[in-house]
Amino acid sequence: MRLQGHIPVYLFVDDLAVTAAQVRVPRIGSYWQIPGPGVTDVDNLLRVTDSLVALAAENDIFTIRIDPQIEEDGAAIRRLVDRGLRRTMSWTCDHTVLVDLTGSEDEVLRRFSTRARRWIKRAARDGVVVERVEATGENCRIKYELLNATADNRFAIMSLEATIRSYQQMQEAGTGQLFLARYKGNVVAGAFAIQVGEASLYLTGASVRKDPGSSEGNGLGAHGVGHAVQWEIMRWARENDCTWYDMYGSPSSRFAEDSAHPLYGVGQFKLSFNKQITDYIGCYDVPVRRGRAWIVYQAERLMINANRSKLVSRITGHNIQENPDLAWFR
Figure 1: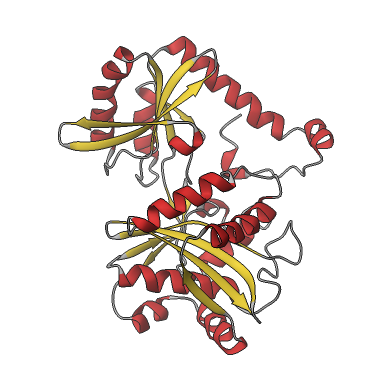
Figure 2: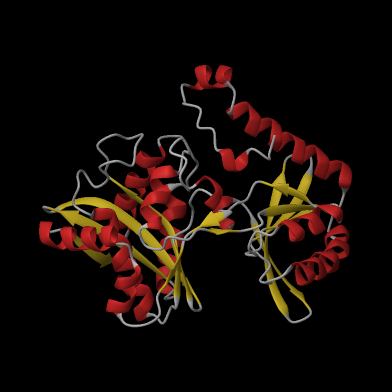
């Protein structure tokens, strides 16, 4: 958080630890972005937010953003809206694919699709090698350049300096691992994964692509590079006593088969490891100072809608990628 200009704030609500990133908005003030809190139902979520509002007001925080991992439920969402909360853009992902890592390696593999198992075997046969490497400056730079090329100005990524420092910090703490995949001696993919307790997370990854705007042929060809990288991450997670793995990001279950969805290819790839998508209720704005919170909320809506504009697309040269999962934020 500090490397991106934010201030970590450590809070307790009763015996529940809550970490917030304090984000400064020029001329408006600061808000708290909370990745969580770590609750599993709306009753406890509202208990936490109600407890934090007064403290936030005392510290001149104009709004609180909460992003819990509570599975999507219409009744739960209505309760939040009825309490005056507004859904807003998440810092993380509202939809993902979770992989069960329990049992033996063979049992984990058997839960994959036939396609995934076939690509893992193909990668080994073709000589794809996935290595767990130290987060040296050079290895981090290689991974960063792959991600930067994949992003192609379509989404924001951390700076190279922040990437190196954060990867090294997590690896030194024993909670993160950098992976590089090579084919015929050349690096064709990279990934970084982290561990939190029994959970593991695919934090970020990228590969060399034949077409920069497409995930087809990632790793410069049909050699199973992507599947090999994911399998090695899962093997690392299992060795560190993780029982499940979050593949971090997919279309919603509602639009998983929509080929026009900008994450369709990503979703189909991840669904080869588990055919079920987990949908969360999303991120919500808890206004503390309603006037300032409303200004920032509307500014974000304006920015998102501008990115959907054909005029803006012509000016910036970027293609419009309409995401039906974000249709609510207009």
